[in-house]
Amino acid sequence: MIWVTFHGAYDFGYVVKALLGGRRLPPRMDDFLALVRYYFGPLVFDVKHLMRHCQRMVGGLENAAKLLSVPRDVERAHQAGSDALLAARVFAELTRVYFAGRYDILGAFAAGVLYGLEPLH
Image 1 (cartoon, helix red, strand yellow):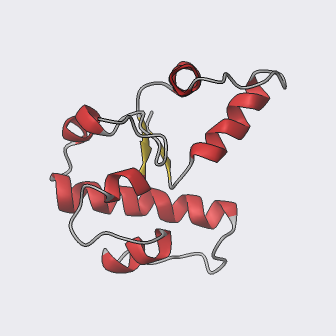
Image 2 (cartoon, one colour):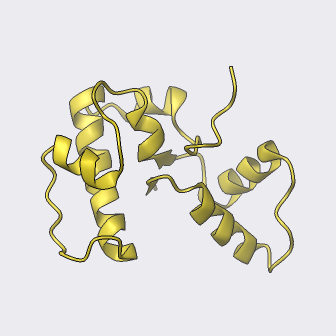
């Protein structure tokens, strides 16, 4: 299973905290990301992080969809379901256009990396 988010570090923080039964999240980023991998597996992709590796892909989810000609089929922008569907479609199109549909290429640098929590090199 592949999990797709857009700028989803806080979303994963919320869900992981709930899965921990309300216990505090770990203070170290590595420990938090290990919990994300534990609960969701290795195939977690943040579209906002992927966009950093694609020419001319800047801005938010709406702009990414516009640049990739991905329509929003559900009219209610900024509603969880509508945004989730749009993020999944943008992910699919971004993968097709920039990475030739090769998820193995994505996995090498983007699997498990949440935008804003990228490792410092």
